[in-house]
Image (cartoon, one colour):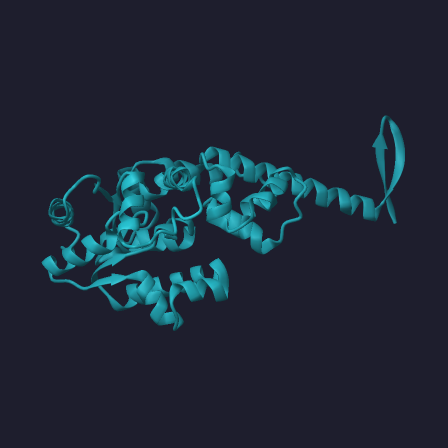
Length: 305
């Protein structure tokens, strides 16, 4: 079987294999263009997207050039890192002209008050009822989530949990072993399941989560729906210094661009962290000052009422 195509005004028979190859080639070009545009719109350098997705820099370069025959699994990692659904990259509708996706982007870029108003209209159930008295601290490693969360919980008389510890209990092994054995997808699945267990078992709790949870749209949206969220932030240098003070030299070891990469990751996630209900900058602040500020936010925002 063959179809008739017109080239230079002349009808030419094109066999089905050629048509299929051309369709595949066109799809690869489309996906590459959409990945590149999504990455540039979020200001994420390709090397940072490589780290966030676990897909090699070379693979990403080929993908964006329209020559990379990437697997569905790896493409899904890229989509997650870009905070997109994979169907946005491969679907027929242009994600930047589709009305539904335009609304989604407007929602993502809106301030917290506007987003809450939209959710109240779309979801009659009270956001406060959904969130109960659960509080979640988000932010990059080194912001003080575990230290401040534990101290604030003690002062307020409520439980404190670290989601990674819950993941380890659920998975039956350390997080490092989970990543090595099951990869990022396995870890994210356990992360989502562990979050659901916390929601089901605790009405009143302070939870600290890993910095990368915001890169998984479904899990992060569930977190925002069921927790009062506070973004703990600090300067990139302070993030790095605190991690090293904990005895972890891995961020700098053999990587002279570690600080540059940290700045890029922080910049790429800022819009996601800003979806939190409140923010606390812990840069250059004594522990007691940051703790007092965190407890004040919880009380002033009536997160425990």
